[in-house]
Image 1 (tube, rainbow, N blue to C red):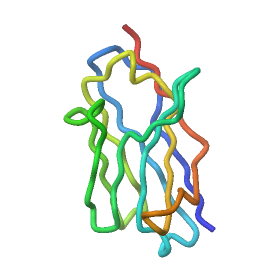
Image 2: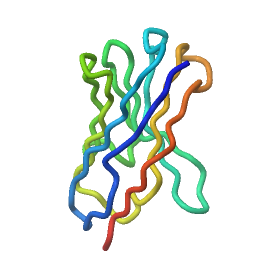
Image 3: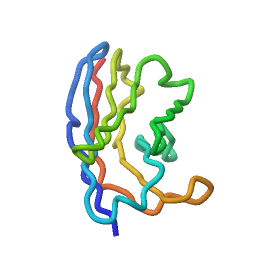
Length: 118
């Protein structure tokens, strides 16, 4: 089992920045892919950023150039640095982890709220 715990959410004005953290614990040796998702009210959960075990990253166009996913293996933590935030970035942000790239995510965190005011 793997446990994920997000932190770092909050209220920020448009144009501001936040850094989310996802602390991992448990059988983390089995994890090859980690990601950040978000879900706004009334919308489907969407992928925000993904990072592989070797730190290959990928982003959707909606956040590319503004968000950066990174990992600190010594701290077993994955980060999401968010800059130039927009009101449409408001959502609950979730950390996710899985073993196999082609399979659904095995583990999810409880989420952290990010609210961007206009």
